[in-house]
Image (tube, rainbow, N blue to C red; front, top):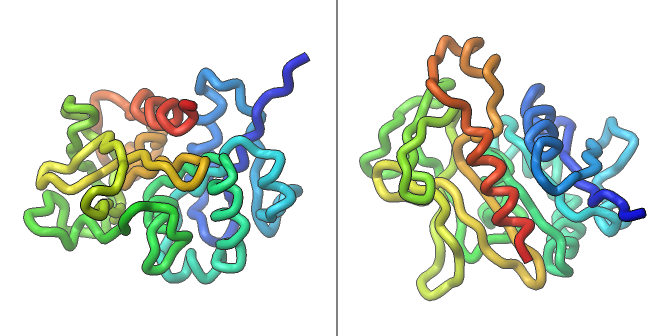
Length: 221
């Protein structure tokens, strides 16, 4: 009998309530048949090299401020880097995308991250919950957004740009790290309907299909 691949989703002080659960739901709905487990200081599974050894993917959901999140997770930096470098997969959503960068972060990207709202000609200028338009594989979509990052890649580095913001900066990408793969996204394609209604936002279509596309791109051999 084939065992389901394990997906570890961080849940703890470096995440915001509702974010880990939305990422877990996204992973459960994918075609990969994940056995989804929460990992963190208050969970049955710790974030550790041993726990990661048995996982196919580690997902870092949204949270609060980058520096606070990194303070909570920096002691796991080596374990997460080792996991991905040896063939594991990393998925980062919003704060999890920031944390994939280097200043500060796990340094998993062939470049770094920065704040989209501070970029030139950004279409969002506030840290409040809002909507952002992206071109996802060339098609316009609207996603939930709360002070997410954009990503930049060093010249000649290999990375696949999955989505861009209206100002041309990168909203989602997939890149290799050692034998593993990293997928990151600034907005929240995993957002559920209550995120929008709680924030007084209206959207015609949720972005779950885009989140699943990112999962597939990261899990591809």
